[in-house]
Length: 351
Ligand code: PMP
Image (cartoon, rainbow, N blue to C red; front, top):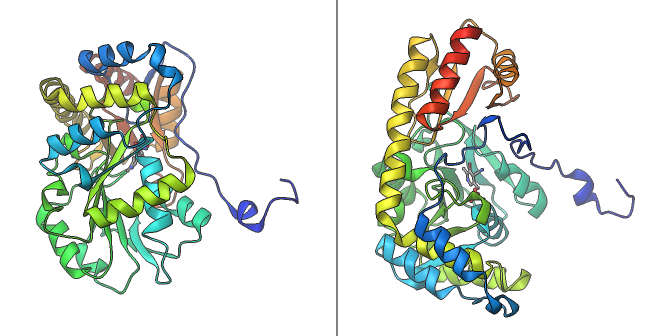
């Protein structure tokens, strides 16, 4: 590392994303992508957007996309912010809303990007432990803070908080922003988008990477009070006024509008998850209750790292985290029934 970089850069521990292997015949159940293709209407819209207009800058306000997102959630376009994947939306949230003198709160264990952003933007934080059943206990968040952020369902556990608990959290933290990262909400939870009109301190973050099969297009968004959204726009415009390209805007707009395909594919993922969870339990795994497109499971008789390695030898990749307390768990993305079947067959062979 060059001595010309600042101490901030030297102090960073970069987030290491899940492996994206180049080998085509692997069954890839490690980064929570959707096993189904994007909506055919979204693909047609993206293909149509590859035309001579690409020489022009895209709409800096992404008005059509914001309209489609607002329409989906029953909100107004002024309550919508869009960004280049929810990771970028979250980066703006950390820079603007969560940079206070008082520490922000997030669960321990949670999405590992949060502490990375804190390191980069100099945000103080306090980690709030999960309960013994790996659940978030909302009562523990009623302490002075500069903001609260949590995924719902949580990652990588998959455990869901009911909307009533989110409301408790919002009331207990009326003086600070509560960010609910709903990357996986469409696989079994109730979105806090329904609360945006009533709580000016709420910011809901969603993505098109999971339930809309568009991880490769990088589109995410935030929903909140227009004043919170306005602040995010200012931050964004200070970096890059054009975060979403023309193709992404066209595809994301069509994907948000294709409700029928969205409901059908997420329904298929949910049904496969329930089947896989039951099969894993039959094989002796303890499977945490999941409302996401993955399951988090451990086997009392087998080491998780060894299981992950043995699966990999059989061309199946799942995610294993080395951090304490969860190092005996595997996080397995829900694939097609065929892929889940191959996983179960491989595990039967290994166990
Ligand atoms: N939040 C959580 C909890 C996630 O697991 C992910 C996906 N890794 C993201 C946000 C970011 O997703 P994306 O940037 O693809 O929208």
